[in-house]
Image 1 (cartoon, rainbow, N blue to C red):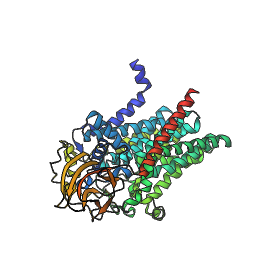
Image 2: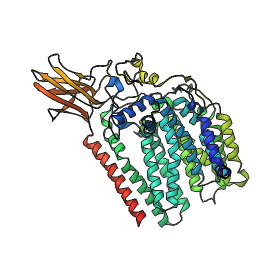
Image 3: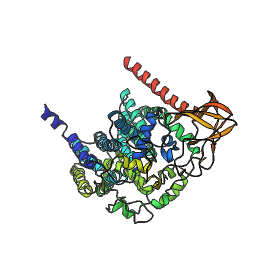
Image 4: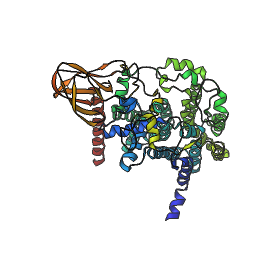
Length: 561
């Protein structure tokens, strides 16, 4: 029985082994250096937000000397939900939780590409394309140079979403609708930048597949309607995330520390193999690899030459669409496309034009697969898979491995957060952190420079019975002979609420830091401060919950009939 299982699943086992080899350094003690090390801080704040009772999490309480930040309103969520699961339920360290999350994305992306490829190709060709997908240079950049966990989950979900849409185009069963809704929902909350880049490609490829697979207008319309339904329901499911992102963007200061014009790779950088562990800078002297991949480019050249011979192939429209998307992605990475970046406002979110490597990495394995449709060239994808391994094998390793624990990262990103949970232990290196990755609110002109008490009051005001129920909920009593203004050392942001003697009180931003101000009357007062859902966020959460409940009820009812 075991032998039969191994024979039947040998290619999947090989994908697992390849993923294990790629992520082998994840299983060392400590952690390697990478650009986005702030992900450890993001994970810590996700855990703290969940423990404070926030669901979905929105306020990260310990950034900026514990002034907090509405971080999770705008940042992607799913990778940190996954990592939080291992930290909270299995008590894994932050480091190990994030490393496991990394590995899940490697293995998951390989399996997803394999099953997507099986919609068009044989098992062996699908395996070859999976290897090319895993061993494209930009995958090594994301894993061992940038540590870009959001893009890594994008690489997992792009093939899953396209697979689900293909199945939905081919079939009318409800299970495929559920699959499409779920995968697109996960992509929406996994990495907003991958979503921005991939969604137009998804629509374009889906339409070309509808035209390729269905000859009648009626079937095409039905397939298109199913896709629109899946997209619409996914958006309803994601309302808790999308609505606050869209409508609360005005509360953050505009701008980004990165100007796209400084990060266009030169054509030679996209073609010539180069490897480095440095940064993206202006000009051709980047210490970061932007290589599309030797095997990937050879495959594109092959398919371009063969394209004219595929006139009778039913997937000719799909192949053409893949080529258009590939060359459009390359164009968007060239400085000649700068006028497009200036026209499209959302381009400022992408920041780095070389992010379009996300798309070239995803598209090229599928293009290479269609070379096998010419029987004489069936072995070309296998050869390119071998080339992809040989040309990138030295890339999949970190620059430096550090023998560190969680405190190494916590001390760098927080003033008093540590694995001992002792807030009296202050970091001596935190002040070196610029926190440029945290955009300021419109009420904040400068960041705090020291750790104050959570509540500040004039000397003539007596504070007592201070009770910190959680990072976002606390109460205290005051006694004063005159009315006064208290300073609450959290950034002011919609959602912070106060009561005085159980009656709602108005909070407002004060001073250059934009902290919370609260006017209190004279006499004895009992005060509570809480971060709650605004009507907008409650509305968004309700849309998600109701839509999920209604859809689940509908699907259960359909199953019973």
